[in-house]
Length: 500
Ligand code: SF4
Image (cartoon, rainbow, N blue to C red):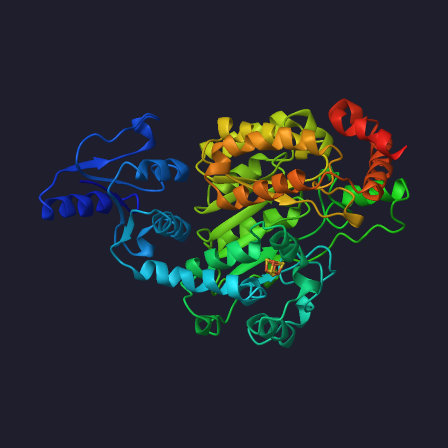
C-alpha cells in the first residue's frame, strides 16, 4: 500500500505521518517536494507526506494517482500559515477519488457556504464583512469594488453592522432576491459559466473567518475587510481606466473633449479603518505609491505597531522609492497585486506610458524580499490575443505566482475582450493557455479562460457598433499620445476594415 498524507508545512506533518506508518506496521519515507524533480515516481510501498506549499496543485493531483489513498491530516486550520492553504488542501483532497479526511468536519464546515452560493444566487459575503470607499461614487460606499451603485454615504455610517442601507441589501441577499443594480458584474460572469467573485470569495472568506452557518454572520460587528482608495492620483493613463481612477486621464480627456469637467481628486482617507476586527486591508487607487497620504498611513501603522495584518497593495509597480522600500521592511504580511496587461511594449501601450523593465525589476525586488506578489490582468480587446504570452511569461519568470484575470468593463462595452473581431485568431491564441501551469493550478483563472474560449468557439459574429466606438475612442487616445495601434497590436488594426 502507498499512502500520501497532506498537511501543513511544519515538522508536525512529518511526525504525524511517521506515527501513522508505525501504527500500520509500515515504513515512513518522509517528504515529497518539488525539489524531487519533475519525474518523481513512487515505487516503494509505505507512507509519504507533502503539502500544497511543497508541490503545486496540479502536480499533486497527478501524483495522487500513484497512491492507494491520499489522507488529509487532522491539523487545525490555525496551524496552517494561511487559512487559504488549509482551504486549498481540503478542496484538493475532497476532489480526489482516493481522498480521505482524518477529520471529516473539515469538508462540512467549508461546504455550508459553498452550497449556499450555489442554491442562493443572490447571497454574497461582501456586504457582511466589507467596508470600502469607491472612486466612482463620490463618498458613497458600494457592495464591493465591482459595483458602482451607491449604498450609503461613508460619513453617515455610524454603526456599520446595523446600518439600514446595508441591512436592506443583506436581507435581500439572505432571501435570495437578486440585486442586478449592485451585482451585475458577478451575474454576467455566472451567465457565461465563469466562476464569479461571489461564488469564489464567499467561500474563501467564510473559511478565513471561521464562518460555518448564517448565524455566524450576525456576530460580525466590525468590518473584517477594508478597501481604501485615497484618491485618483495616478502616474499612468491606462486605456481601460478612466478619470475617476487617474487624474492624468481626467486632464487628457478634458483636452481631447471626451469629458467636460475633471473629477475632483479627494475621495476618502484612512480614518475609516478600525483595527478591531481587521483581517485584511486592501489599498488601491489611483496609484497608492503616487499618493502622499499612503506613505503617511504606512508611517502611522509603523508608529502604532500595527504592522502584522494582511495588507494588500494594488500597484502598477512603476514607482518604488527608497522611502517606500524602507517602510515595507516593517510589515510582516504584505501582498502586492500588480496590474499588468501584456509583455513589453504591449504593456507600455495599454498601461501608458509604463516601462516594462522597471515593473519586472520591482516585481523581482518584492519576491526577493519575501513579499507575496500576485498579478491582475484586465482582459480587453487590446490583449485577448496576447494573453498567452503574458501568462507564459508569468509561468517562466515568476513560477507559482497567483494570476488573476478579470473582464474589462467600459462604456458601451467598447473595450470588451469578448468582442475581438477574429474568433479564429482569438481561439488559436487562447487555447495554448490551457497547457500553462498558472492555468492548471488556479480554478478561478481556469474558469475565466475556459469561459472566454467557449465564447469564441460559439460566437463567430462581432458587434460592429461596439467595434466602431472602440476605434473612434482609441484613435483619439493615439492622436493625443502620438502612437499608432498598428505598431503594437497589428491584428486589431486589421479589423478597422470591418467598420469602413
Ligand atoms: S455578488 Fe459580486 S458584485 Fe455583488 S457584492 Fe458580491 S462580489 Fe460584489
